[in-house]
Length: 194
Picture 1: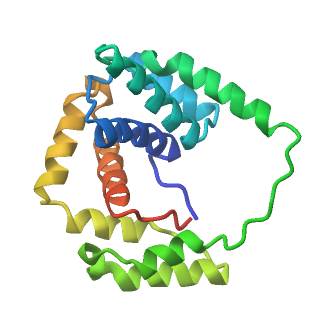
Picture 2 (picture 1 turned 120 degrees about the vertical axis):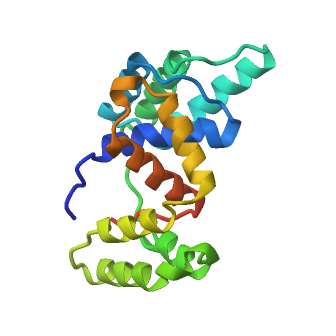
């Protein structure tokens, strides 16, 4: 599969921002330093599960003390500690073989979201190519998904909020497109096909 122009770094960063919004309704201005911190987490390849666990703990602590969150720096120490624990636990551990590496995709197709019925054959074709070991390019599928939901009021409102809360020099069309795509993939629980 060819890498899209914006790349997985922005996917990672946007997933973190969306997690706080969707799970806790926490929204704040994303400054350049916030963006840089999130980018460093991506560079270190800190797993999503470690990030989510860290965010959950900090939000719980802050809410119990009625302290608002206004920057990602508030999560930094917790992420660092949890990542170090993760690394320590992973040392020397043997990797176990997964039963069905395609289970998540099979479950998605078995419980297919009605709102995506217009794309069922696209998803099935992509999955079939993956099973056969052929080249996979999800971009046409992603473009079709984005085009279909271009006038979706909820998505447009979320995207507008996201852009408004980004530092002005980060407000680029490719970042908005990544946000919109990640929002739709998350909303419909679309697994990674690549």
